[in-house]
Length: 285
Image (spheres, rainbow, N blue to C red):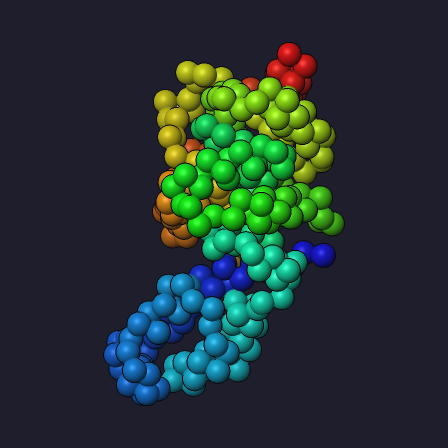
């Protein structure tokens, strides 16, 4: 069963609310840390930025300093517990790398996910054989990658699309993502057939962007993923996928821009039926 919340998003929300409370009290990072006897401001800064798994005792101390009244205090304690949780289906995936774990945590509590990919099939739609090729290629840059462990973790993440009450998932694939690009024929044919099968799920939508077509003249060169969550107070999130690291955006202006771009791309993409028919045609070829 899915968790009702995403820990990484709860950390971002908790940090934002704690920062707002500190500013309401007109306190600096240094002043708060002095009151609590914390050695440096880096600990508080990381909590406010959602960059660390918070200790509940530390959060309770902060709520005392900010004199938070009972109803709001209770709500923030629930958020803090969600942010610090180590429960969930990913606990069994201790071998999962940090980058992949971030995506898994976002997916765990998402109500909707949109993936845009200009060059490859998105991770949630990959077959084991295709995933193995992609991960092995990445190993050329990072020799420490355990390919088989990463494949197992990626395939386990796929369960999110078939769970009870799954997220609404949309994949926007540029035409280059639908070209074999050196992938062995049988692996590529299996991958295309898998996309066609997944498109039959009621919560999965796959749309193709024909070559040379862009939404309002915009064709992003960087893969990105957009997430929204059942609790509207949890921050909508965009993940930008780069070569060696990923960038997480949660500020409304940044997220709004990517949601606007997504709308343009959806307007330029082939309809669902035509997209699936094209994938089926290529799989049969």
